[in-house]
Length: 492
Image 1 (cartoon, rainbow, N blue to C red):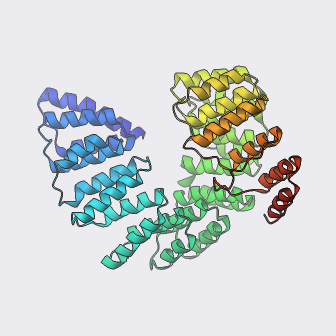
Image 2 (image 1 turned 90 degrees about the horizontal axis):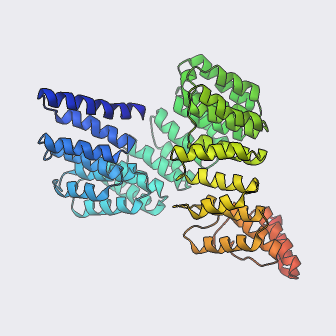
Image 3 (image 1 turned 180 degrees about the vertical axis):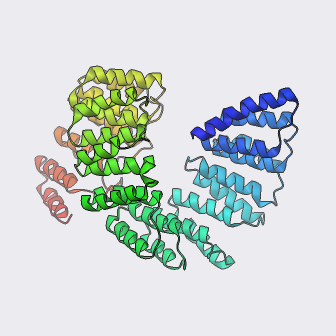
């Protein structure tokens, strides 16, 4: 990201200098700068680069127009992308690929847009290549569109493209994200020569589906096959180790990292090790990794801070925000979302207000996670009015923010108002998760109301859900139903 920003600032400086000296800027220069705009999703700078392309008489250059289509879609400006796209030859696959890729890169789950473009390409007889299919499959994976992916897989088999290495890896990723583990394994088994990318896709897929034992089995198999572990694989495997509480295995991975030397300097690997040791309860080893790192940054600090919080060292977690700033690191959104629950537990209202002011100053408050953490913190510190005001002023809400508001009302004894928020949430586009359902059942239990939305919301019920329902039905004299729920709960 920093390299991309420096590329943009360098371009502005050099372009002005070259303009002064009458030296023309060519398509290659503009292509590099557009790529930097895509990486940083900088729409204003992208538009500025587009203006410079016009000034230099390169607007009709098909290569640059294709790049600009990619840039505008990646930055979320579909209207500008479409205008440029309409002026490009429709029989060429490259502008279409730019439109597909940009839509995928934009990261706004625009699966329908990708499907529309893909369907139009096929209707117009555009010859799709590996890159086209790769983007389409990626989009299906993001939207967990299993049936569409299956149809595409069939089309590729029919056209003889299924043996392509990139596409097979994409299908592994897609099937895992759709929860079809057996299909992903089948695609993997059909690949004759597997490199680190394919193995990484399998490990990431198992981790995504919380199949920790399979992750460790495949790592062992991978090593036996003579494939060396990469830094990306390390960042996938190390978090799995603490999930299954195998600290000894974590130490073996740590030894491997130290032995390879180059990996020990990589911040993602270091932060993963810090996180792993913290969650295994070994703060001494976590601190050794942290203080032994010369390359540590805000990510490492946040990992250590979260470790202090998990292990009950709340004051150290709170002080870490000061220590990291003394080292010259500025807390980011994740840091704030980590430290605010600590303030809530310590009832440290003054420090929390300072963090709130910091969030306002650095424009972090559109972040739903930070706002939700602030709401919970203020309600626990007894300043409920602040929680309600933050919720009312939120431009966007998600399940977490709704649940935080329900919690705030419950925390302060406003059960009828909490029920009102529950009803408002049900009328909104958001559906409660298992935590939200638990809160709803608790409120209904306190108010002696029967709540019957679990089946409608398709939430996987837990023993705690059934226990609350049994208590609620018993209090309302519905003993047969209570007995039925008790029996159902015993099967979990």
